[in-house]
Image (cartoon, rainbow, N blue to C red; front, side, top):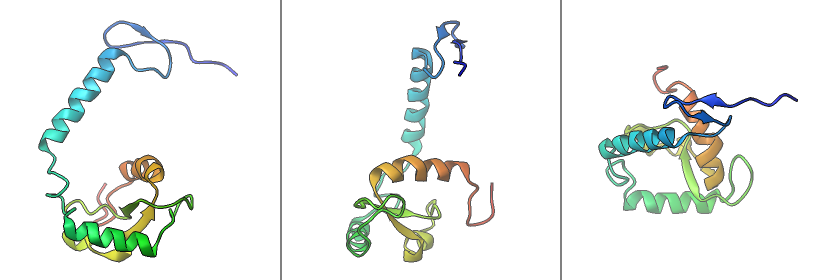
Length: 121
């Protein structure tokens, strides 16, 4: 099996394949910080005390991850609500997930697929 060689970063340094250069990591951190500055807080996005109670009840009724069967700790919105409170509270849009599945494959898939609510891409 052939291995990939090193590459040249935008800053001019040779970097091993699959590794990020320090300048790329700094750029990513700065981009994330800019995004987080503009993003509403957890509570402002609808995750209130009412949500905490509903989440706890849902997880009690659906205790295992829909992907792997491990104990669920997260209630995922199958279709991202993006601030739509009607969709946010629609229980048929909820599914139980463990944190590794939610933060890994579920979020990755969500970023790749078009918005399913309005057929937007």
